[in-house]
Image (cartoon, rainbow, N blue to C red; front, top):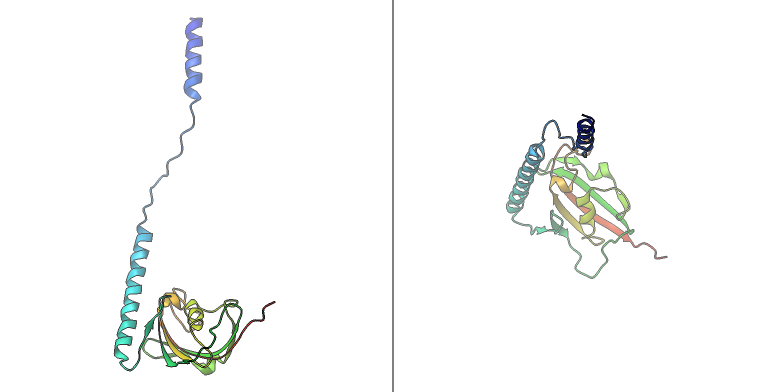
Length: 181
């Protein structure tokens, strides 16, 4: 009897000392929300792209260039001679306006005023920042930015709403190169 008691205690000890099992989640989440969001964004991007391409096609007098950065642009005034384009830290003095794809002015050049911008050192929406890097002093360019290159889903919390593609007419007045230390 003593032996049976020791044997059963030993069995209970070894059986009770196994490693704990991981807890299982109560409910399993699928990626359905993320998948739906991805599909919604793909459709939004495709619709914006189609609207921009239609706008380009209807502007028969202009030659638009597709940038590597996901926007389109055309030169209104192009400087052919060798000249500098802005680099990190250079001060770019420029004027611009902002309108929607229907040509409705959102911000006029007078509202936005002439601006000095330290290249890549200050806040500026990504499309305009990338567009300035393509320009030389004295050039005027019209940019067509899909919303993801403009103010995206959140807008500018003022006049630009959610997911609004933009047209920006930009003129660079001067580029002041940073001093190398």
